[in-house]
Structures are given as structure tokens and as C-alpha cells.
Image (cartoon, rainbow, N blue to C red; front, top):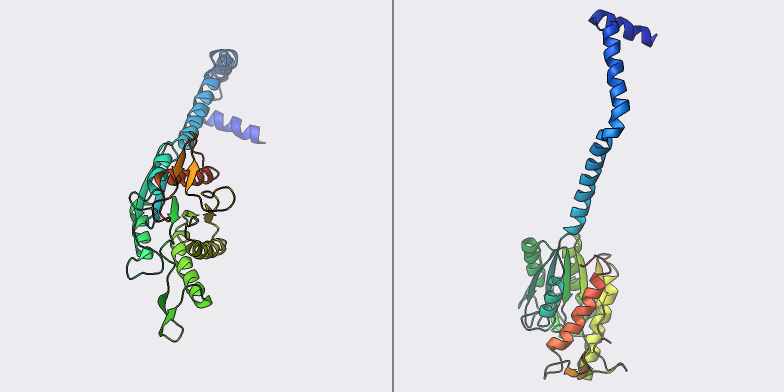
Length: 279
């Protein structure tokens, strides 16, 4: 029935003639006989496939990542971590880095410096895919906070109330990155020369680790044993790859030398390379 309709259509349009069918037949013969030989179809297909493959490969090769490095004096200028970390990251292709550090800053004293506000500003300017944070060295202190009754109360460092309030500060800080889908690498604080201060720092690290679990986009990187003597003790000197010994801290037993900053930076880069391909 369908064939009859086609014939009727051809008759009405004047195309149902012997010459018409002969022309169609000749065209088919030419295509079948010489099309494969000339490789017209294969050429067209191969060119399209090659083009698509090039676009795909180009996209993968040109994948770029923006990094934001922030923190207290450890990340400030000459803070020993930010500079070697930036150098290492920039040694790879398609990486851009912005770094900002503020000496004497922390999450506790927002009257001195508001990290929540600054983080939002830096995100708006640099549009990071990843943020590397090292902060907390200046948070071993008591502070005042508002209670549920709207009164200002004094929170002594290490108390349950202090820890609860500090956890809230960490959550609010991390939420800034989480809401924007930004991946975060939070570097834990290093062991300190003064044993009492070191114990206090260890308390902060425990709080950080516990709070990071609630944020799937955040990874905690412990460096506690990275700068130890191998027996879990504070190390004033460590051996470099060249066999020489180098100081790990400055005279205060707190701040890092460029050497120890390089060790920490390599640890961070190793963790980052597990998530993205660095070339």
C-alpha cells in the first residue's frame, strides 16, 4: 500500500519515468563502487571523531584550579608555610594561587580580625576551587561571648563552655566554604617546644578533627608527627634530603623555618594530588 502511494506521488510530480529510475540507479552504482575506494564516508567520520577527541583531550589538559592559602602568622609573609606551598603548587600546570596571612589573628578574637568576613572577600575575588588553611596558634586564650540570655560571659580556655563556643566559631567559618562547594584542606597545628603550650595546641587539633567530620568537603591534615624526632618528641633539628640537619623552628619554639615549611608543604601537595591530577 505504501509503495503504491510512492508511485502515485512520483507520477503526479512527473518523476516516475524510465530516465528518472535510470539516473537513481547510476548514482547508487557510483556510490557503492567508488565511495569505499575514495574513503569519503570514512574520511568524514574520522575527521569528526578526531575533532571530538581533541576537544575532550584539550578540556582535560586545560583543566585549571584556583588555590587560596590563608591563615595566621604561619601563612603570613615569611610565615614559612605559605611561600613554599605556593612555590610547589605553581610548579604544576594550570594552577593559580592567592595567599593571605594575618599575624596574631585567629578565630577567637574577631574584634582584632574577622576571618569570616575576610574569607568571604577573598572567595569573591579569587574564586578558589581549593582552600588551604593553617590557623589556631593564637586561639589558646580565654574570651567573652554572648550566652543564651543575651549576656556577655567570660569563657576560660579549655572549659566545656569555651570548647562549645569555639566549636561554633569553627563551624561558622567552615560553613562559608561549604556553602560555596569549595574543597578545604585544614592543616593541623604543629607540636610546640613548650610542653604546656603543646598540650593546649593538641586540644585544638582534636577539636578541629572532630568538627571536620561534619563537612564532607573538608580534609584535616595532621602534621603533629611530621616535625617530631621520630619518637613523638619535639625536634629542634631534622635531617634534610641532602643529609644535613636544619632547624625546624625559630627562637620562640613556635614559628616555623622555611625548611620545616617545605616539609609541611610537600605533605599538603601529596594529599591534594590524591584528589586532582597535578602535572
